[in-house]
Length: 470
Image (cartoon, rainbow, N blue to C red; front, side):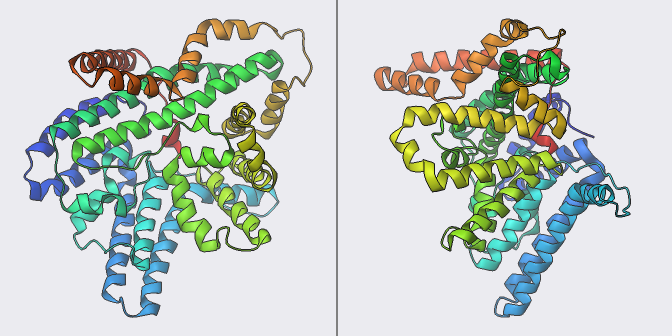
């Protein structure tokens, strides 16, 4: 069962937080574990054993590495077991059907296999696998308490859609954490901002992309193709960054500090900079556990190119078992190779030009990401550059209707996707101090965002979460 609404979260949270706060300190991890299992079970109870199995595997392998710490072969064996079983589970549920489909496509007999993708499997598999690798490397001490380790794996705020939290990020807080009113207040602010980003911005601009994506290509003008693509670029940003903010906010309320996952990626002046700002925990994971072990950039140019190719093919494939995701990853591979060889220095000398070029390249990348049918993808990209001809059914002024209905939301999304408001806030605090007046304005605005978000949730049936699909 796929999560279709945030309403369950609102029903679940008050009782969950109250029970958690009332639980004595020594039992908080146990309470958190049970609450997280309940939360996950509501969404996909039949695949709960898979997540529990992954937890048991990596806990056991971590203990095996600890016990046989002086035996290099056994330590490697436990690491191999962890990586093999984790990737095996991920392959079975996420990629086996894709693999068999491609075998049949080239004439090789293969079974039909199309399981429902377990919620959050890409996120918690990477988390648990990184734990075992870090234990093997000696970067972290293995967690002896199974309840604490289980609470880390199934931590409900970020279980479904990240950010990807490594064990080292929360190891100390799993053992001892304090919860203050200031933390709870900060957590509420993050949560409301994330909720507003997802519900008021992502959902609204997303409906423009969805309606445009269903139109025949002949009925999409070049301006509409670009406007809808910009809308999708804003949707995926506010959808995922909004959930990440909500997760970080809930983490604060529970006494945890999760890593930042987004840092205004659309102000990037290069593709390299973009991936330092977008889905930062995933970028960090691939850099730490794939790119560097392959040799990183401290090798020959040919090997560096090979390493980048592998990382970006896997990054695309991580998002889903569809060829357009692989193409999306390789699109970034090509852009990064060109950038590293010729353009980085030019970008630094021509910053205005780089900030004009980047949005164009990123919007194109999201079109590749969004359209799985290659014929449709080629046609849509053609419409964006004015190719494909104009049929009698085409309305060349369809973009006027789109701007009339979505222009304000798109403009608001563009403004909020850059740090303009943050800078204005910082200037106001610097000039007037963080006194009662500023706090009152903040509280009123946050209250409005919360009320509007809840009203929208209650009234609307359109509430997709893009990254829950991965």
